[in-house]
Image (cartoon, rainbow, N blue to C red; front, side, top):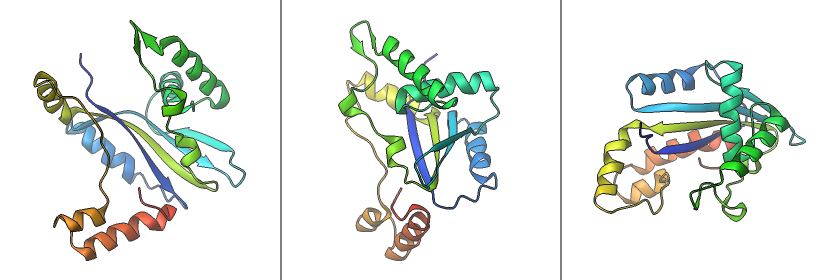
Length: 184
């Protein structure tokens, strides 16, 4: 079974007020077969930078540890804290190269997700598989294409394209900035 494109989204919260809305929206997307949540973690970083990690799904503890270890391979963080991160690092080292293909980014290429989370805040790390993109990705590959880059576009850049009004962009920025004082 082919897996669709996978994306790690990190959302920051200064004063999280989780009421289940995020999980409900992810569940709605899963039910429509738009995305599959591979894993989701809530990370709280206290004022000293110490981490607390909580799994955000209905997986068993064993499944959470296994998937947390996979996330540990990506960002150096496991559901079992240091032990999970160490297990992720070991598993990453064992699978970093298969058949001559480097499977994980080099140390220089790593995205320091945990370092990007400000002290005294929280973040949701959501690993998504984009089911909707499988046919597009396959068509691109059949045409000899490949991904060069990707990223979310700022609401203000969308104003320049005529896709948002300045008022809409300011409202979206205000919503984004009210959390972490920086855009998502």
